[in-house]
Image 1 (tube, rainbow, N blue to C red):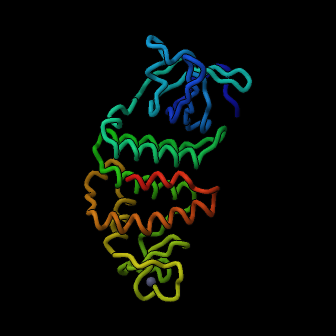
Image 2 (cartoon, rainbow, N blue to C red):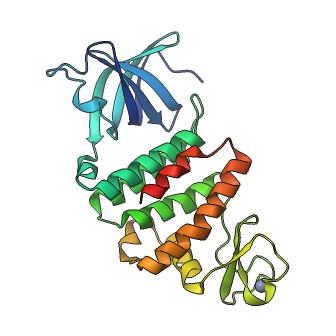
Image 3 (cartoon, helix red, strand yellow):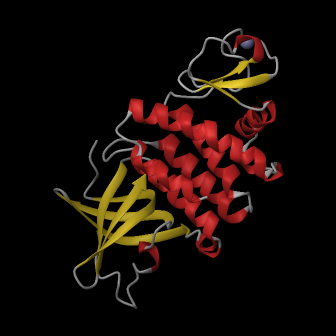
Length: 251
Ligand SMILES: [Zn+2]
């Protein structure tokens, strides 16, 4: 369904490009219409009422006028600009990575309420709850893969279904494997049970409780290894090349 000629939509600015001298072209991610390209006229002028609402990561209600293909912003009611993300380079780079993932997984004119809600909730805990950006990233990735129908199985061995200690991870099938089932599987990587359990805990905790998770450096290194292989294998296979994933290496 197309937009009305004047419509107030909830959304978040995910990027902008300068347009002529004083305008900006915004990309606004909305739960209702996916990614929208919207002109924010004269918003680079110092006194523009649209100026504060035309920055990346501004979450709010956007009043948009549509005429054919063209959409123009007329007013913004800011709910949260997630300003403090800019104070922490790791939090900011996590936010950009999640932004890239959202752009990868959603399209214009396609409603994406689950992805939108996940993105806003992850930005909130990242910006306001002081949760370790790496933990936020893992939680976001676990839940995002679930939304895309590619969820990893972290609870039980994917071969025998038993809840015994997980010592391996099968990249192609996207799940943990126990010691006795770990043979004869080419795509199976040896992992520590602590690494799998850490991801399992992150997957089960409500997002606003993630602050309790403290990651040790060696566990993080280990998770990054098999988890990034799992993500890349499934995203490259199911979608176009997942180039945005390279950003996760900046952590
Ligand atoms: Zn097993």
